[in-house]
Image (cartoon, rainbow, N blue to C red):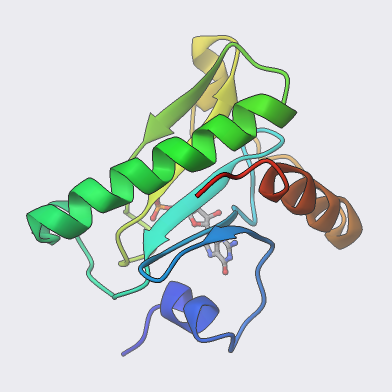
Length: 132
Ligand code: 5GP
């Protein structure tokens, strides 16, 4: 069965896309911990990140680095935190979360709410600073 992220890759359900390459896709998390909270996935569906082959895993991190630089350019923060959880969606993904203090990346925290228009604007703003 396809994951929800594979459906996003195929355009069957919408996302607020930040950046894309042949192998990877970055889009805003639907329930963000912080403004600009972004998910980076390999388009090819694999559940557990450490089951990715070495090349795809390394490429995922390099692509995430480029996305993180774009986030840092547009969202005021000390760092872009990097987390892998994967308990909810069985499709490997990296969370990139703009943070100032440790609690900003606490996944138990109440999530932020943005309108679709706000999310579209955030994604376009960050995406405009993405350099492949
Ligand atoms: P994890 O699998 O890392 O525990 O959590 C999955 C993450 O994906 C959560 O932060 C959740 O908000 C996000 N998420 C789940 N479904 C969707 C979706 O349909 N679209 C988007 N953009 N994010 C999603």
